[in-house]
Length: 638
Image 1 (tube, rainbow, N blue to C red):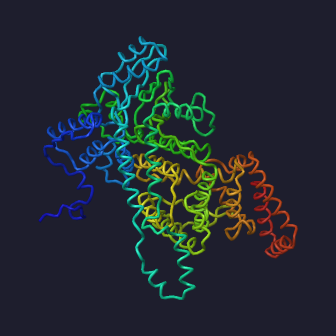
Image 2: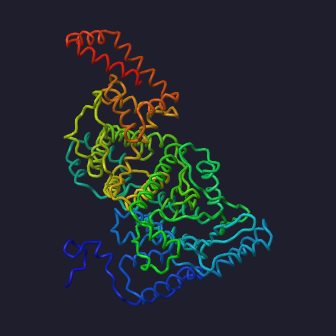
Image 3: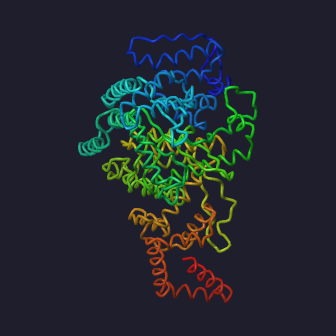
């Protein structure tokens, strides 16, 4: 028999997903409710039509199946479709259609929903509603899992985007929630299996057995899977239910604009285009906001062939014609802006757009020819506690700068990822550190710096080598640690990881060599040096990074201070003086500088300082002048 399982001999998974076959697909609406059939019938017709006209690849079949299953499963497909470095390219391309190119439902039905919803609300008169509905485009400009978008005109306000929810979508999500919760409860109820270690422990003394059992009780609840699957499922589904109420999205959009909008945002780090929401035209199922004109950041993936896609309009065709290295570079810079924006949201304000896939990020061109970034779809907005933001900063700095896995593992309590009793158990904490060491070893690939000099012109250590993050290996490794150490992944943590993962996936589709840590590391260093919140965790971490021995109680290490300044300057593209000045503008930064200078002066005036001076005299006048010069510039830097 022929072997259809993907192997290296038959081309692997890429060949499997890209393989096309011609088969007729007949889909009939089953039992279910009227609303459920409203969802499935439109999709079934489109699938059957496409299959009768042309062959369908396995990747397209999976995308169609997820679309048939409804919005809950589409979310999984969207996440995978944003990671061309994790999923095979053909599969990622097929799943990307789930972002804003799904099968739309009937426009007459959509117009009826918009008209009845707005007239029932009563905030606007019937004539204005009729005028808005009459101006809707014949077909939606975008269709996603929960709703579809039309372009329209609103008197006195210009062009607007009108989003209307799919009929029957709420019932589908309710059924999905019931099914997933049933599965989660079943998995949680499976008892733990006896391990070889527990059998061996039975042969030991009663005292040893008692100790082992106590530890096992702490690290396990007698279940095969320790992860709280039910609570995780409830949280995941609750976020989807939030998206089903467009009034929440309207409120989220206003909150996001107040922080990050170019027009009136208060953030100093982020300045993007955010559409204005017209609240008097918003209901649970209808959302009306300002229309912003732009193109996807991933449009440059297309080949410059105007005849290959007859469905595209002139604007999209022009974009494909001008696809070149310059366009890729331009879009990649905007992706970096998006990542900078996400990091600021994640680490500074704690208010994060949690769904920045390619359909929600636009490249906008101003009248002067410059480009800027625009955000859409505010159904998911996450709030991150300040202690978690501080711990994330410290984790990145400790791992990249010091490769101190033990210190990173100790921050998992601050990150609220692992129960405190795990961290309080010395053996469990050691096991966690060892597991993280293996995880980072497999997912962080450090460049070879053996041939590079360890000293710069001023005698300081060379800049820190930033590792390349292999996100697929990191996810795989961390997923194996979840049941072992009772990881409790808060909703904001999952949303943050998804947001960064999606943006990195977009960047890698434009530039396969892109490394998100080259942006995260200098950002973390800046926050670490400035510590604007005055966090004691950040203060302790910084002290451990500038002192010998990797602890906050060691002696000041000048080479480490120079290396921190050099890293921040080289990677951010700023002069060291500028970095120092930015640090000195903050109260914690001034406190840090005073502490370093004071400690150095005390050491210099003590016996250690005298011994150093005598050693300099023994080295001769040249060596003494060199040491004085180095010390002079060292204090000028501080």
